Length: 128
Image (cartoon, rainbow, N blue to C red; front, side, top):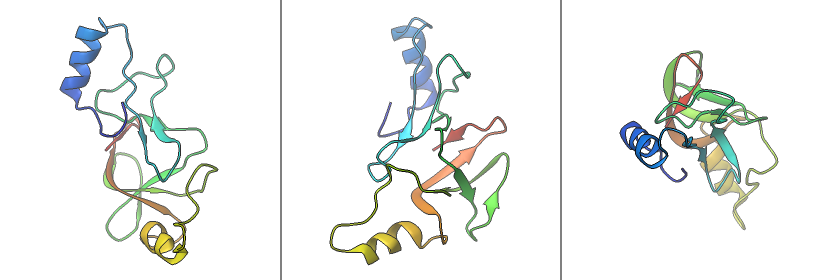
């Protein structure tokens, strides 16, 4: 799924009723601004968790920070940031690079701010 996270009860229903317990539901997370997936499950390689966007895609370094910009470790909840740039991420807003910087990179210097809150569980799965 894309656009909105699928809630766990809908995930379970679709998996069991439509997919007869055999069709993995890949609930992914990405944005137009990122140009590619940031979080995604790997069906068959890792267990799926209903309601989760999965784990970071290869090369993506997500961080969850608190309201003061402190990186949180382990199981936590806060703001989802991306620590390192990657090839598909947007580079500017046409004709207004200052707005681009202010919107996406002023929350915490050097980090891309997704604008989304996020929870990470003890197994490293992300929930938005």
